[in-house]
Amino acid sequence: MIRCAFSKQRVKQTAFMDPTQIPLRDIHLPPPIGWWPPAPGWWLLPALGVMIIGGLLWLRRRLTRPNVRKTALQELQRLQDDHSPPIAERVGQLSILLRRISLSAYPHRESAGLVGDAWLHFLDRPLGNKGFSEGPGSVLIDAPYRRDAEVDFDALCALCREWIMALPRRPS
Image 1 (cartoon, helix red, strand yellow):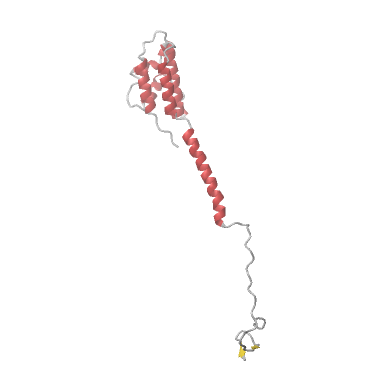
Image 2: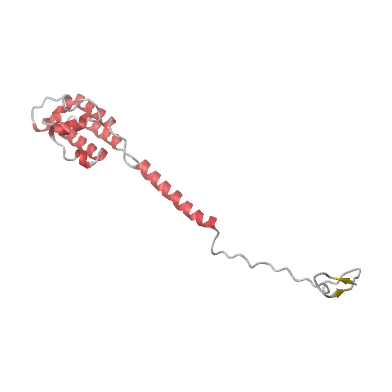
């Protein structure tokens, strides 16, 4: 007879052991894993999805928003090509266009209340020259109000185009 180390029972040694005679316990499996709460990686997946969707929406908005420079150049070209209104009205429309552009490109406190020479000096600032205050741009002050204004409209449009191209890039 053989004595088992884990039991005080004596077991008969036979050529074949009877499984019912061996004092072993059955294997106990852990309980099945539930579906809730999910593992940490599954919590990161929805957060990543929200971030990707938000990034795509931001990118779409950024790529489809109107560009101030592009829109202003198109409007300037339209004004330059339209020869039907009198020159005083065309200069007035150009002045309004420059005002709208400056309100879009600069903070309102910098450009909204400017008139006269202060307005022309503001327009000179991005160019670094005196094209508006002493050059062809000086007609913006009084030409819209005079019937017989002498204006080199092409030179004025070229100066305005140069000013539009010198606009600061808007921060993203």
